[in-house]
Length: 310
Image (cartoon, rainbow, N blue to C red):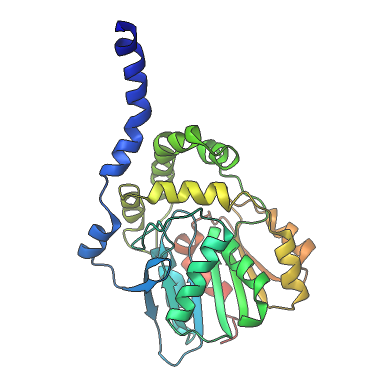
């Protein structure tokens, strides 16, 4: 049995360590209790959701859905652009991110749309609102718009997932190969790659959202964040949304797509793919903008959003 204790036990320890560390991280309820972020909690059937309203109370409503790894604080510059146009803006944190609960269940399209539907009902958002999505949020918006185009006045997708992406490294493997090894890799190398990406972007750009890179890094220390990203990769971002975009076109729903020319996550050729599917969509490309264009290129984003119908 000596061989077991000298060889197998260390291997088991290495395998178990990331998951033990995950259980010891602070729970989101603890973080929520001491946060200084403005916002409120909506108690929804699926879990507690952190949300916030901005702008004039009588303005037309715009609802913003963030992406895979960056919570609703990613919308800072866009909120200003929208409220300056008179919109009443609703933002919220997806489950597993920010200050929303780590709700159970596979994070597939139904999971994400359920949270959005429940929040809209909870906040009494009437049909005829504008729905905006960034990155994975763009995919959520696309799916919502395809299922219920009659509920929207217009849709906006910014650096949207759904027509191709290049996650690279560990995330690409995890997306295609669910299971223990993928979950272990995401807890170890995947988390490290997220940190490296945050540092790289911070070194190359300035941000219109103060402290955004520190806030992103802090997400990695909260229980349930990495598993939530893993689940969305495996159960939602594996899909292609061509059919949904065809439905949006057939419904004659106004669609604005905004792309970053320097985006290495959502390749710029996705713009051409969308044009082929929905030539009626309005498309704007921001030169040299990276995937984080919502906070790295606020002036360009403002210009792209200025012709929305209020």
